Length: 403
Image 1: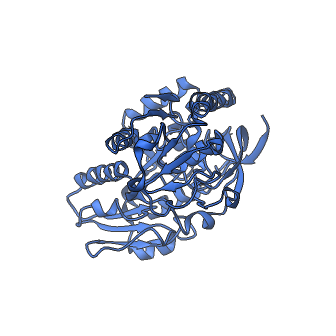
Image 2: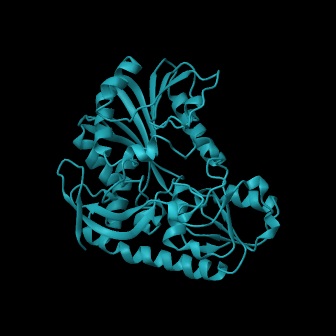
Image 3: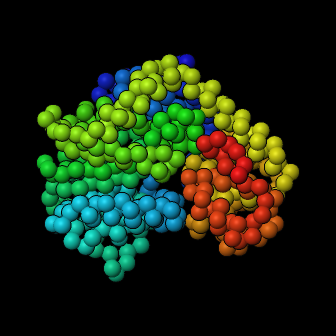
């Protein structure tokens, strides 16, 4: 394996290449022509020092995030999860707290936070949030980093009691800078709650669809602890969360060597140790696991579906990667459906597969369905069957099989 880049951890260690996915389109670059899609190299690496699995490079952040196509409220399952997290936070506090959500998107989470909180959201995208008269929070269009931390502090008006980051701390090559901003803004007795896709259950198990240009980091608890310690922060509790194909929910506080922490931490660290997280040779074997997953999807689905009428269900970022890595552009008669209006009328990036409104599709007209948004498969399968679909259904991950 060849060395490719340097990690942003404090040791600035040279990373080792794990897998080269080739030139991939940007997952949110929707177009009516596959030739219009900008492509960039997508190379997975690992840092020998902090053990963070990461990309070798990332496109310009402004080009990705200033106008963003992902809408939090587009998925009923995601809305349900955001409500559940908000309920956990609400139930922890009876007094008035200052809360800041990083990457607040369209405000779905903040709308479910109790009104006794002083709530703020940070998000660089100006196109996703539409203010409602009932909203009792403020949205600030900024990147969350040390260059803006003083400005954020002035906007919020005080130190922050609670910082929330749900699937955003993996979406930036300057992740260390983001955690440094957490350190600066967090009150001395405050905490942060962060959710990230769990590398052990996703990419390190060969589920490669979490690898795309804006998803720069793939965390394990081991790598998170290393990175947080560099920023004088610590994990005090951790939970496994059933989102994104497997996630971690991390409770973070200022570093305190005398702080009593949850036993969940040692349990997961032992699981990671047994899995081989700290052994570089484990990462070197990963390419064969990824190749096997790709072969399964191509042989079990693509070869069977190439001449059939195919319904692609959901076009999340992860699904765009699956479609391109597994060469879905060879499907001769395929249509995709997605609830996000901004995607409808365009093609899946990198293909000529059109994306249509789910309400305008004749489900009885298809022979086979592929659930690209497989982390929401239960809801989606019920939905398409209720709408009249009666064909075979293929779930690409984690096992690449029909149900």
